Image (tube, rainbow, N blue to C red; front, side):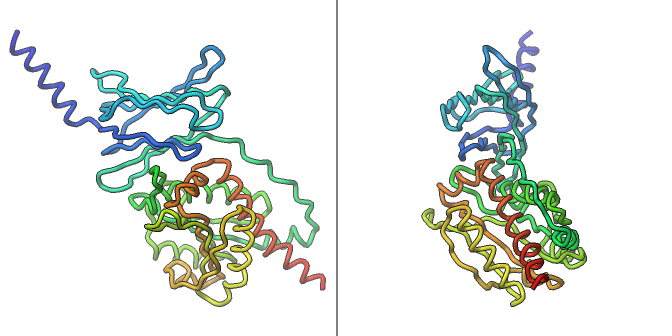
Length: 329
């Protein structure tokens, strides 16, 4: 009997030794960030009770290293967020999000470094309807001639910059790029992306794909970062002189639309814009993920929707409307 008890205890110890440590929970505006020391295995579920909706992420074989966390009123429309050790045999950590309206959530785990991963829980907010474009025949024809190559910064084991609350840049860039591609296609513009999921793409592969894409424009989507948390604003980069006019237009347009500081149009020897030679190439760092306020903006699904729409409008205005106006002259 003692042997059986010892064996059961040993099995429980072994299970605990290989359990994932859930170390913290933070919030960046609308995005919930749960840190762990290794890749978590999770399931999601939802239910409705007393007119409130509950979205649950259950981390299997996981141990909550700190006390239960309860975050109230951190996100508009969310009543309550809890992170608890739901059970110890089996080891399950559960994050429960209580909302007063029907909501769906996107869940993804991003590796920050060899000892830290962040599981991102972000609400799926209704995207703004794209205004119907009353294009003239020449504008429609011009849009169909245009192809944009989108360089989606970082990805996979390279998270890029990481904000004070733990928001990884790679997640932000992919979210913005996916929406930008959608908005451009709605305007009749062809699009190609160098990644469509959380994978690592080497810089030389990015430029090779771009140069072989037959695109008319290369745009790199990135966040900025600084050791000074007060540094803020939008910066747009170019290298080849034929890229400057659109880079300057984009910088002015986006900084004004977003209400962020215009940090200038900068000529810089960045790999992806230097070695993309088949078309004008620009790279925009829309905000500083290292700045708490701007990280909060980037953590908002609504803000990323607006940013993507503004980027699409800037491209359309410059390459379609401007060219058709010139053609009429």
